[in-house]
Length: 385
Ligand code: ADP
Image (cartoon, rainbow, N blue to C red; front, side):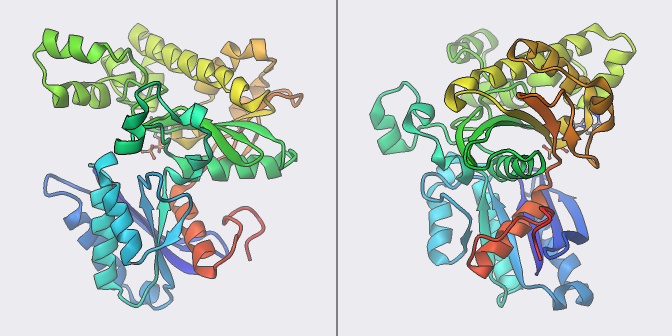
């Protein structure tokens, strides 16, 4: 099936036209958005695709990444008026993202009225979390009345990576205990038990959990009031500080980009080195904590721009995790990466591995599955046909 996968974010619109039978990307690209919002970027993508007869003639459907599905959407769905209303009704939970996603859906509906559209939610995979994992210790009415709970994100990536790891490394599908670490600009872990997410590090918003490029991850909630008073910030100012000025960027004072920080560390920059150490330490602590929801650990799988490419980060995380029995294989760690999935530790469980993710490909794969009305394999899994 030839499908358009669209990811209308708050800062960019990414797209790919994918042939899901081969996993081939026919065309892909991104448009940066500016202070006019995502509209012009979406228009530019539509123009590019509609203007290329070779692409548009064979197109059979459109898949959209939608950040928040609330508790309404537990899996990817074909978009109709009711689904659009459902996405709108949870927009309060993701005020930067869901409106951009909806705008994309509506513009594409106008541009290609004959093509079916599918919504693929970042939160859906984590809807299997049990209440003990998703409830905060807050008055219960906040959940019932306002949807305050942990949702988790990056779900499509965690699901795919866990499924692929199970297959590649021959783990028992019904019982495999896997932690997936999606490390990109945003970072999260998922604890996946027999293919179902039972715990994840992100929560109500993508700010909870690990140290990220510019996000703080977990901080003491008491900090908000202190920072507001001490720095004279309003709530939006504190939120901005935690989301955009913290994480690797805040710790290093240099950059939120891993490549730049690795280069700085290599040339002797101590704050870059400390930022990377804290990144690895916090991740290792998070992985170790997943032994409780999983009841043990078979595999830790790295993915995302950092997880796939940074042998340095993987090494230090595994060093911190040595008490759990991980024994790194330095040569395999140096050799494996984006193009070469594989094991990077001694094979005795728990072991560590690298499996590349590809969000546009996953959106297309899910779209194909929904449009075919069946549980189709994800493209690239070697089973699609
Ligand atoms: P996003 O979350 O926006 O999709 P990515 O998954 O592409 O982002 O991850 C971006 C991160 O991956 C950046 O911090 C970038 O520096 C890092 N990265 C990409 N390539 C490398 C590399 N070769 N070595 C180390 N880090 C890398």
